[in-house]
Every structure is written in structure tokens, then in C-alpha cells.
Image 1 (cartoon, rainbow, N blue to C red):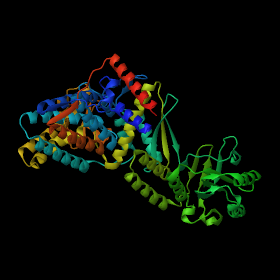
Image 2 (cartoon, one colour):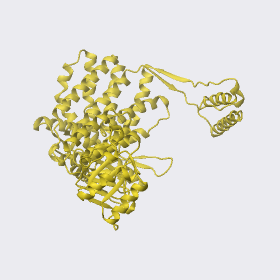
Image 3 (cartoon, rainbow, N blue to C red):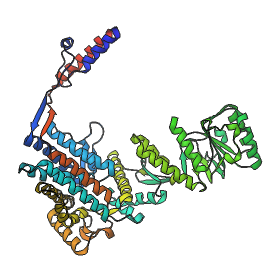
Image 4 (spheres, rainbow, N blue to C red):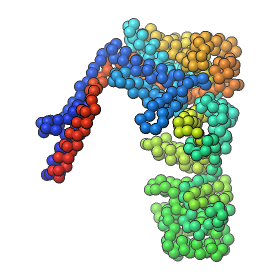
Length: 590
């Protein structure tokens, strides 16, 4: 019973308020402490939310476009961070007023949603949200029904998104990908490196960002199936200078069993000695007399053999082994499928063009005989990735697809300082995500030109589709908000936004869809030809996410927040000491 008492006392300690000083003597009388809440209604609640949204949006929108500025983020530890990434800036902002902070959290949700869905467009979605909310609040104050207003905004957003899908142009080649990456990263050099990576690894390959120890950005390619395991014994190495073992046209044995009894593999090895073919073994482990036999035969020149341990752990290990078996055309040897090591024959072994085994890395270059089986396996892994519960599982599935499909490109980012390195990594990640989005749904003119074009071409059609006047007011608010990104790009470049917007709309109506303003060179031109393009998916996500959250803010009638209690350093220390004493007394009962 002593153990139970200790638990009850600890529970009482844990239930104390995080704000008020703790009185140890009062713990015996109560085990619950409730913090007071503040409840705001109608205009007061909406005004606080809008204030929070505006503060975050004003901090984020200065980064939009090629002439956008940076934002400096203070760090409690280490150097301050200088960034140009909308979602990173939004996540850092926490306001003192709890009600305004709720508004800040809502717009952070917009940016995070755009980041997770499309990987970019976070600044555009933040600016759109601010514009819709401010226009909507004025309408609600004037007596418009908020629910009908929200309905109008959402209907208009869906129509705009559908139209963008219809007018988007598919990506034609590497040059389009390079332009998308250049616009997203704000750097021609970064765009060139990303385009080079995608060109090399192909559609199924994977591109990853790593830190470099140099001052320059580099790119490394790994072709074929890569396994993060090396040889089980250094005595199996042929090239002593490079410390690698290279097998040309080897046979491949894939098993989940531990190989420690040499008698299990002797029949197979005898057949390989006769055929004079090299053998590559992937097993859970190779040890004991089996390893000794392989080493002796390798050193005598009787048999060219290399063995590695299976990659991964648990169920993931079996998946990796099956990937290797399918890529090489080998039979997966496992007791669960009814095949034992001593029953393996030559026709159960896979083939490969070349296999290079280093101390901690193995690369299998396939011979192309199993292309259909590999395609089917990749389709299966994609379905698994879509159904995966965690980001980690999705990431591992993507790595497996890349390894089977076309290899991996590693972009190694270098910089003179830690601050610059973090900024460059964020830019690279944005650009990679934009390229993926562009390949998925195509491209549209950048610089807010597509939204400015749709504002004049779609307005009449959208308003006609609304059911009543309140919905038309909501739709009109969204239509007006479509101009915000184009105007902000111009303002960040030091030009009057309204002037640029009217000129962009005039030139696009005169010369056709695709014309707009290139803020980098301060010229009106064909943006497709100039390479000023955005992924359609990024623009669609910005519209849908901003309309969703802005509509919810406008229908808010009540806001409930905690009332913070300011504490001096002395009070904080007293609470800390009291909690420590209470915990010590509880433990003493054990």
C-alpha cells in the first residue's frame, strides 16, 4: 500500500498550476487546481484574431518575390537565424496577448498546411489569408451573414482551383524544372544544381539535402541499389588499396537466415566452383565455420565470394531483403516460404551487372532483366507509402523506391557560417518540394500573374454561380484577395503594387495568358519564356488553405483563452522548491 500512496501524492504535485506559487501544506486539502479562462464575444473575439493574423502576415510577407527581404530570428542558444522561408518565420512568432496568439496560431496552421501539402507557397497562402480575413471582417461588421460569407469564399476558391488545374501547362523538360527551382530558391546556382540532380536520377530517383564541410555546394550521385552494410570480413576484400570488393556479373543469394554451418551451403558452393561464377551473399549474419570456409576459399582463389549482413531491423529487414531479391531476380530464401539453405540451386540465385562492396556501403548495379518486376514492386511500395501512418514510414518507403528506381542524388550544402548554411538548406528544401509539385500538376506563370489574370477573367462566372447576395459578397472578397500576391511582389521590389497589378492584367488580356511582370529584371514579358513560373499545386494549395482558415475566423462568435498569471523570479523559484520538496516526501513513503 505504500507504493500506492506515493503515486497519489505525486499526482497531486503534477496537477498544480504552472502559474501560481505552490503551498506545500495545502496539498493535503486539494489535488486539483483550475486556471481561469477569459471569454470574448462577437466583435471583440474577431478583432483579437485579426490582430494576431496581421502581425504574423506582416512579418512573413516581406520575404515574397525575388526582391523580398530576410527576417532575423533570435535564438535562446547559438547564433540568430536569418531566413527567407515563410513557414519558418510564422512558426517562430508567439504573441504576448493570448487572444491575439490564437490568431497567430491559425495563420501558422495555414502556412504549415501549405508546407506539408506542396512544400512551398507558404508566404502566398499567408498573404491571401490576411487579405480574405480583413475583407471579411468588414463585411461581417456591416451585417453580412458570416456563414453565407464563408460558403461564398469556399465556393469561389474551389472554382479558382479547378480553373488553375485546367490552364496549367505540363512540365516539358529539365529546363522547366530548373526554372521552378530557381524561382523557389531565389538562386540561379541552386536551380542549376537541382535540375542536374533530377536529370541524373530520373523520375523514380530521390534527391536529399546534406551538410558539407566545404564552402561550396556539391552534388554526388549513387547509382543502383544502395545498402548501408559492408563486408562481414576484411579478408574478403580484393582491392586492398581502395578497400572495396568488386564483383562483375555475380550470382546473388538472398536469405533471412543466419549462416554459421558450412554444410548448409557446401552443395551450392560446389556448383559455383564448377561454373566459376562469383557469388554475393546477403544474410542475417555469416559467422563461425561458414565464414571461415568462405574466407579460406576466397584467399586461395577457389571462389570469388563476398557476404554482407541484411540491412534494417525487424519487418523492415524482410522488406529490404525482398527488394534486393526482386531487383536481382533471386529467390527469397526463408523458412517462412518453405525454402532452406541446403535446398538452394543455381537457378534460385539472382544476377547483377556489377556489385561494389565497401566497408560500410554496398552498391548493386542491376542488369535490367527484372524491369517489369521492379516496376510492380515500386507501385506496391507507393501504395504502402500512401497508407503509412507516420512520416518516418513514408520517408523509408520513398528511399526504397529511389533505390529500386534510379539511384540517389545527394546535394551537399556548404557555407561560410552556420546561419548561412541553415538558410541555404531551407531554400533547397523549398525548391525540391516545388519541383515535385510542378511534376505532379504542371506549371503556371509566377509572380502572382496567374491569380491576377483569373481575377478579371473568372469574376463574372464566379459571381453568377453564387446562390444569394451574402455568398456573392464572400466570393467578391476572395476575388479581391487574388490580387494580393502580385501587389506584394511589386511592393517588395519598391514599386506601387496597384500600378503593376493593373498593367499585368491589361497586358495579359491584350497578349494572352502567361504575360506578367518579372520582378527580378523589372520588365513586363512572357513569363513562361522568361522562366518565371510556379507549380500549379503550390498556387492551388495557397488558395484552398487560406480560404479554409479565413472562413473559420469569420464565423467565430466566441473566443476562450487562458488568463496568464505573471510571476516574479522569486515566485518561480519558490514554486520550484516546493514541488521538489513535495516530490521528495512522496518518494520517502516508498
